[in-house]
Image 1 (cartoon, protein in one colour):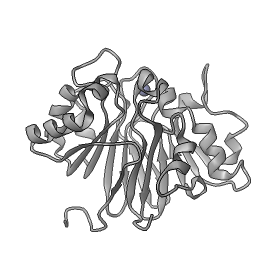
Image 2 (cartoon, helix red, strand yellow; image 1 turned 180 degrees about the vertical axis):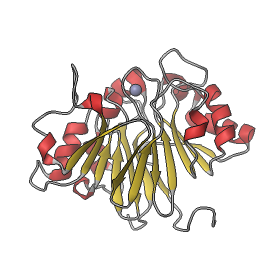
Image 3 (cartoon, rainbow, N blue to C red; image 1 turned 90 degrees about the vertical axis):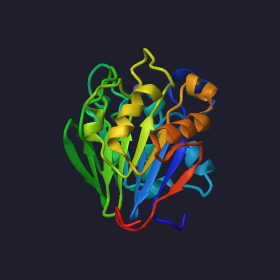
Image 4 (cartoon, rainbow, N blue to C red; image 1 turned 45 degrees about the vertical axis):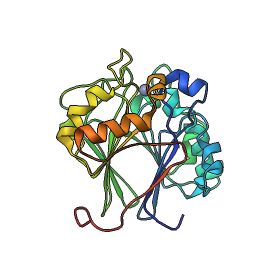
Length: 262
Ligand SMILES: [Zn+2]
């Protein structure tokens, strides 16, 4: 892709049924910022989606892979993508950012034999700050989601992108994710009992955050049935802000002018 700054959705599925039936793809989110290529949450089919994508995304060009948490819908292809990024360890490079429980404990998700393939594996912590290429990544707050989970703020010279990954609602959310663009996991329209945000709970968060653009993703069955693009339209009108629903394979070209100058 000629434009160096873009976000590509290799999947928009969330939770078990939508992923298990592949009603939406589940490959994660590819973000390119000023020549730094990052893959976030490589769920089932991530590698396939990279090559099925138009235009193709070459995993060997990745500078980093970030795992918000180890649930399978976010993490199933983490080992596959670490291999693909490095051609099976032949071209050792790249940073992998993961919660500690992806590497240790009873069921670490990252195979030991794959770990030396990459340049480095860094464990994320609450209030952490990391750098991959030209992008600074921060993990402002631990989410409430059953396993160790971090949302992200990606900052380059020209963009700030927040990724509010899976979490139960908590009132401080809006304090932590000020950004130009907010990508957010929403499972349902009404509050749900599955440790995920709903549209209703998201409203006050967005009203406080006032991002330039909000992108909804990680759709559960309730959202699919409600038609995410209609939900986004209604939310846009109600909050008087730009809210869109991501679609599988959709790319958002990012402006190249500095924040606040367009
Ligand atoms: Zn999850």
